[in-house]
Length: 126
Image (tube, rainbow, N blue to C red):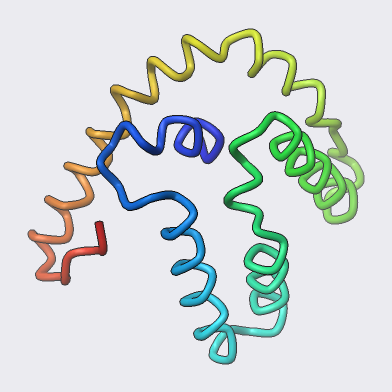
């Protein structure tokens, strides 16, 4: 889903993706001191590696799939699976997945806004 959001970012009247990711990375790194050490290490890898921006490209998705494959292999050796071949399926279905995402994402934003309102939570940044 990150790849689809990154590919269609400009269609949803969001702030520029680069500015959003820079702000998010800064916020994450500011909050990292309060996180458990394993989570803090993950946050540093995500922010420091500019991973959210990398998901715009198939190469960035492939790198993410390789990382996930390694994590699964390490944590669940009896269930090891290679996720990288799924990239070919994603590429083959790119247009259909993108069309579905264009319907899904506005629904997700409405649902989130409604939930925040119903739970007296402050609105999220745009």
